[in-house]
Length: 247
Image 1 (cartoon, rainbow, N blue to C red):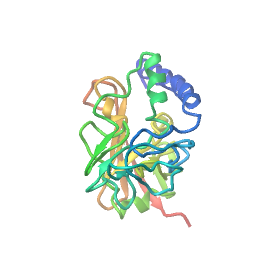
Image 2: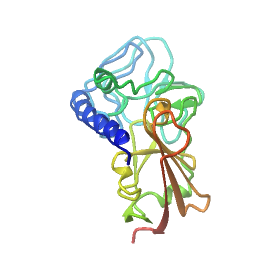
Image 3: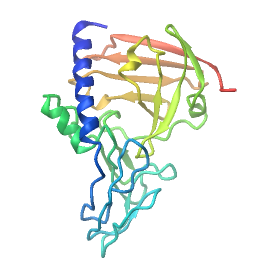
Image 4: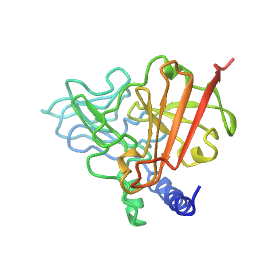
């Protein structure tokens, strides 16, 4: 890894420690649209008491504390069953890497890592988070290949490890590659899997490091490309292969 790349990642790691503190409080109250802060669906989003507003009821996969009101319509938070909120107004839930406090902590250190046009969603266009490329909607992961990255063993140049799968609060599938990319995944853990693709910080390609990968149609090989900010050619590429499902 080159010196400038390592220095940038160290700075981001430092600010990450700041936002963990900043985002560690309770969730936000009602936003005036009948939404609450208590609809978090993963440990990445801390819950709070919520509140009531003037909008309609909130549609989520978990129950909220309050959040009803007169008028307005349903506000959809993405779910596994309706990942793009088809037919409804869509709203992203905050996660540990998309809440306002997180973005503000980075900006305070001179890192503007929350670009306009990212972390938004509308009817049929779920773009929650900053991993997806700008203008790219989230797709549910390939139903066959997702079974190969949920605790399975994979192998690469740096050895073998388990590839882990989790859901974030917006029901997006995040993939952790452990040590399988020769140390790169220590920084890039938590790719968003969309269709057959993997994305990390791709909304920020003009300025900051990012990564993108893809799993083959037979689900047994993954190629990961790592990019410096503003560059279209990867500075590193790793390929890992599937070994076996967990016994």
